[in-house]
Image (cartoon, rainbow, N blue to C red):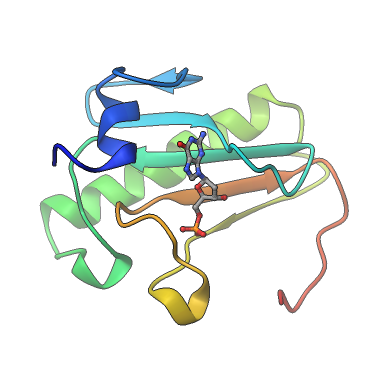
Length: 114
Ligand code: DGP
């Protein structure tokens, strides 16, 4: 999508990637909520979590979890603990309409989240 900010980041038109493979990219969040706050996204434009379909999309999301785990290990937060979270729709705090998984760590993370 030409007007999607995360498609532009995935296409390397703007921003800086910290990870890339054939289907997924990751980059540091503009407004970090923890010492490590990385967004892991598919290159494919999917607007919201509820638009994920079984099959190819489901495989993609599984792969995103593997990538998040690798980045957590690289950033040194895997042993202490980290969180991967995705907000779906305005009521849950979604503000960018291209699915993204927040990888958060490097501090104690409270539960339940706000
Ligand atoms: P959410 O509220 O769950 O939709 O999260 C959107 C996140 O995206 C938020 O933490 C800020 C981040 N963000 C928004 N625009 C940009 C951008 O242009 N660059 C980067 N690196 N992060 C962005």
